[in-house]
Amino acid sequence: MMAASDTFALPPRRRAERLSVAVVSELVELIVTGQLTENELLPPEGPLSEHFGVSRTVIRESVKRLEEKGLVIVTQGRGTQVARSGSWNMLDPLVLSALIDNDESLGILDELTIVRGNLESAMAGAMAGRRTTEELTRIEHALQVMRDSQHESDSFRQADVVFHLTVMELSRNHLAENIAKRLYLRALESKRFHGLGYENAFQSTIDEHAAVVDAIARQDVDAAEQAMRHHILTSWQRRRFEPPREQPET
Image (tube, rainbow, N blue to C red):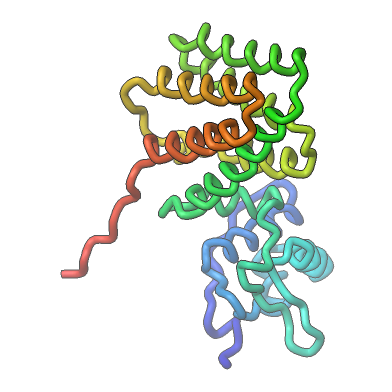
């Protein structure tokens, strides 16, 4: 196997006030984007230290942070090796951000939508199964705020977010809430996640949320799960744009 320093050329680095944070951030992006590939060895401490303009101590600390995120495996006598993607902590804020920000094919957002759909449908079903009168009033109010703000896109979008966060909270499934919230709120920061506008977007969104509320009101667990999953998956497909295709070589 060729040495990592012979097979990988580090790109020009970016300036940052907090160099230790920048080292970790840039290395995370290099790994997530595949510029440093699975099983590849990172350059030794010396070249990394020179490239980033920091001490070897900072490099060692940075590699430790990468190891904690599941991105690398440090082996005595062998060096630091990029781990397979299945080992990455994809809920880590830096890793998740790098995945979404560099998601040209929308594959990560497709996967995120499926995971989110499964989690939120389970939470909607849980809420339907044991909701109180007060909790039903809260979710009905969240839907009414959406209806009242449908002619103002920013307010409507915020009301939409509040609706989903309310269902998560009232499900009382704290683990699912924590995971789904991390995925959802980070995805909202991506322009790709918001995608394309489409005709009757406000009305179709309200109708789908109303189906969730109706099922919760009737305490129909299966219907609540199906309505939430249908909304999350189909709304993404409606606004998802096709990524640019690679042009054939001539």
